[in-house]
Length: 143
Image (tube, rainbow, N blue to C red; front, side, top):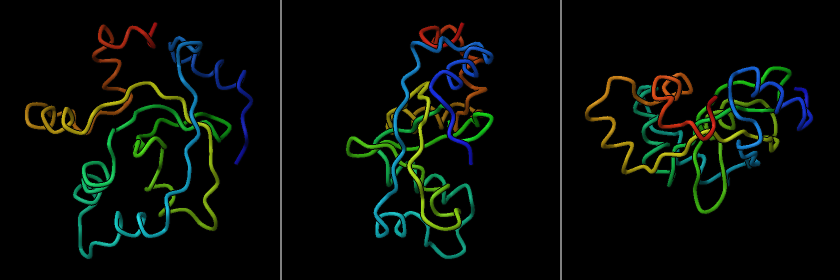
C-alpha cells in the first residue's frame, strides 16, 4: 500500500474530471470489532443482501468517492455513521490490522433516499459511474 500525497490525490481527481479543490478528503477509520461482526456474520447471506445490511442497518449515509491509499485511487463506497467514516467491507476482508486511510468524498446519500432510489432505478446501488450519468446534479464536483 502506498500513501499518496494530497497533491497526488488532487492530480488524480483532476485527471478523472473532478474539481479537486471542491472534493473533501476525510479519514476512514476502523469500526469497533463488535459492530463489524454484526455487519458481516449472517450465515448463507448473499453478497447483495450482506451489502444492503451494511448500508441500511449500519450506516446513516452511503458515501461514494475514491480510496486514496494506493498508487491509483480506487472508486469505492463506504458508510458514514455517528460522525465517522467506515469501510466495513475492506476491514472485514483485509488481512491483519485495518489502517485508517484518506478518502475523497464525491457524494453522500441519506439511507432513506437510497431506499426510495432503489425502488425506481436499476442502477443500484449507485457507484461513481452513476455520478457521471447524472453529471448536472453533481456539477459541484464534476467538470
